[in-house]
Length: 224
Image 1 (cartoon, rainbow, N blue to C red):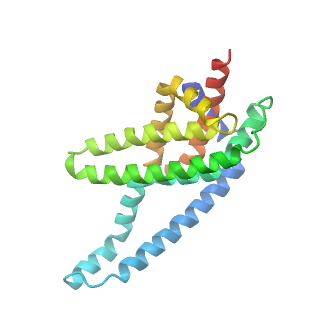
Image 2: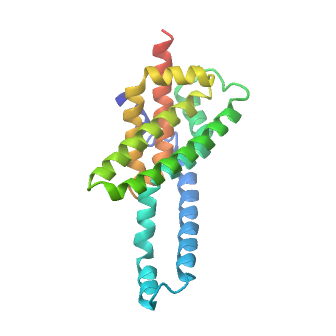
């Protein structure tokens, strides 16, 4: 896992991901700006909540509430953007670092797209459940549980999304099970990055890059 982590970090400094990183961060910032504008408009048009000062307080606290929203739902956003940029990032890294690797199998892009939609839905449901759990646990337990739970999901699903480019779902699941500890550790790193403002902008790209290297190492070891 550490070798895959190091190689993923290297990809951000050797020019491999420069173009796609700049484009994805730009699109992400635009989407965040649109989300924040929609959030501000929604708060501004709220009906009066008992007293005018309550609505005014919500308007002033809107940026804080929005940042909290991003913190809670950072992992689902990583799921969404990871799915969107999977093929481009994975293909770029594979062509440069693994030129001898077999081309993506015909029809696997459709399988990856379906898996990505399922992945995003699971991430949203998990984080809604964790949000409800926050009221039952004392700090920092909710945060720790959230990072670990999202680490399990992000690791599992990112690895499978990358693996589906080259093999069937059954083979991908078996390879994932044989490398569960390393995949969970990698997913936890993605989860941590996804929960930190600014770093969450690159978390999906970094997660895909790390999982490409982890998949290649795991698959090579498995076929020896």
